[in-house]
Image (cartoon, rainbow, N blue to C red):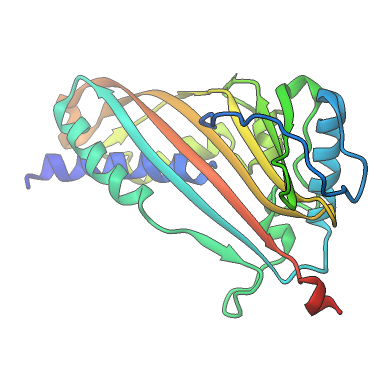
Length: 268
């Protein structure tokens, strides 16, 4: 493998690492049905009530103490690279497959590296949970399969281009990075490649929350997103002959959360 290809692979590696750290594809909605299992509290109706209920459940889970374990893991992939430089395209696919295939999981039950809900549940590193404004939400429904012990809140959030770290719907649900922090990742390869700016267009996001009817406990949460990335890279030093090359790719991820609560028998 020649030195130019190796350096281009390093570029793609840096790009994948950057966007895998900022962790919404859509998922099909389910038909609503009725159930005979009673709710611990009155089931919300309509978009406003569902969003209000979602925010309350997020806050309650972030501050909960009676769970057995809280887990977080990330499913992700990067694909569909468009670039006029064939070396960059080939390097991107190789590195993307490798980097997004890495398993990443944290748990409050991990004795070697213990974490708390502050570090495990959105928004990580904050005492506050991610909250949605009604303006963020495109649609909100509850699906309720007859006889099931759980119901599911499904919320579609509006698309956004270049969301801010804190003042956007994605900043409220994810710990996304600032522009300057993302571009700083290119400093490690600035002798070979530089990037001045980028655009990140987030598609319609999907939030899926599973709730135990009898206890109002959140048992699962999925935050899915799809991001179209556009940037230009400029070759430096021995890669100066590459010139300035536009590059596009898609990054998809689902952040998964699972909260395990004690059963009634164990609690007794």
